[in-house]
Length: 415
Image: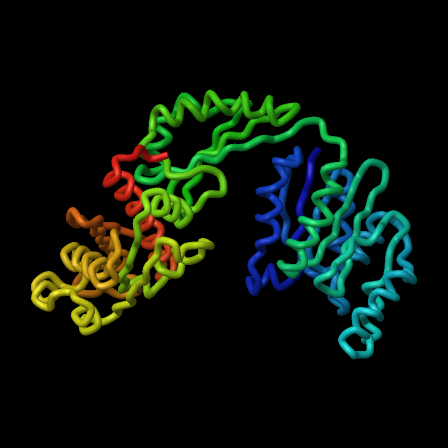
């Protein structure tokens, strides 16, 4: 089954809102046996939207659209679908009653414009939206389907999970697309391509390589009649990758660096403390994004100035001799955090997030200190691009280097 995704709203084209809905669906369609052909962002123009739906209807069995279901004059998705299929819009009495109840429960009179959210065409059935006033549409006709959902992310996610996915699973599909993502860190995209060159260029399974903020991702995609067959096709490629680069692999599929660090700390029954400068608390925030992180994360310090670093135990002569942005200070920060809080491991991050230089060092110069009972070491990172990305990548590298250290100290193989 082939699909297309439409993200609807002029605000998307203006850059005012980032389209996260399309990416979310795109990552989940392969497991549903649906092959995505294209993603389009479309403005609030009735003629353009009508043409887009009409042509997609002819090309693909499934069109997934988000946005344009509000009550205002620029919400045109319903009208565009109706015109594309040549069907009239009429007010549905049940939807109208739901709209009136929605507003009545808030002790407000329903604005007349909300009647636009009560219309249907003959080929459409409403998709309930318990988190908003805009019901979705499931349009099915002559073997083709259009699914129209709200653009508001939390409304879209709930509708997708609770209503749309169960219906999609009931649709006939010729094959499934099964995927496996192997996440690596420590080697460039070109070097990885050289190492695994003999695995690329095959159709089934297909191996793709992607540069991501948390390293290089290798995605194996197999086209199969069922999940078992897909896994059998993927397995030899996965095993070959694991044989060639075992020390570079840090995770699989949806795993994140912070989750992997948490697993390692919990497994080894050890604890962690942090001290940050250029990342301004982002490392601690990321670590605590994992539920239950209080089991192993003791706490952290944001020491943005030299005075605060010194107050928390970083020796003043060390800063005077080497500068605050240095390997020596990064290691001292890690040791101070570990000692002050009484943790097994400490991480210190100091660097230049930009946009200008600091202590004669260019933006993107970052030093990550790691400390444990047996000593300390540091890693130098040369990062590029803007301030936010430098901070984010510094955190990612700190977490992955910490996980590597935990496994080394406890003599465990990275898995």
